[in-house]
Length: 419
Image (tube, rainbow, N blue to C red; front, side, top):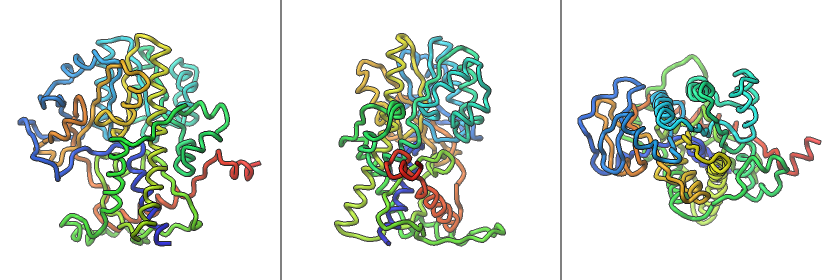
């Protein structure tokens, strides 16, 4: 059971990547670069930096440059208000320079495209779009401004992402399950997945392995003090270092993206993860099998978003696209970006990648940060999600338990149960 518990915790770590933003800056990196930038005094403050030379630019200067590109990827930390404001400003600036813009969103799944089209045409109201279109919980705060701007200006919006249920199935069963998905559901995900070895898989492995081994014995020096500062909230806290998930011993690990539950959304990694237990060849094989299923579900999103953009451009020659996604999908021109390039090699593609600064009063970045985008956007550091380790472990336990209960609706076993 120890191995199972360790794997469920690793699945939680993997879910931090899927559909979420991950900060590129690392305190262990080389010396920071500064340019006498004023402090980021509130959550809306941002600074544009050109990646190739580290020169600070204005929004208008960036828009002038990016208007020459066919597709611009704007990575985000989901829910970061400063980034969402910058996305709205950039979309408006690009459309003013090139009227035939299209907005593409990770935040709507491809099968909801008819509803999105109906909303843009004024045939349904926003509540129907939210409910039947499965809009993200932060839709009104984060994406409504861009969709409304598109509606007001007659611009298309692409529902680019793979449906959540298909992602769950691939994370549980592997990419082979796609052959069992019936029509028309099979058309809602990419026809071809790219799961081969390469820089993106290396990055994915590294993130999961580093996070899953960053347990209590590898914490920052002040974590012991943090553990003693658990405020009494008047609620009972039942915490265990290992997640107690009542599941069968042969359960298959699942990764499901939850837009409102990922620690990575804010541009921070939590580090109160319990250490991976077990050792040896069996543990290594189990971990690698989990990673590959998890990576396949990640790639399902990447390839589906890339295919969605490619189809739109092929059917609408002359249009340009601004695509929004969690920054792991597009940082360093990997993920969705490289998969779009495979489909349309001649496209001119640019990437904007956010960097959560370590010190809001003295914003800085590294050369490694600058290399993650044609432009990087310095954004204010977000509040700690947890001050007390016990609260963080409790959150992890509840999240894992919830996710382990999800089922692959396309499996023959589930289909028989529902008949």
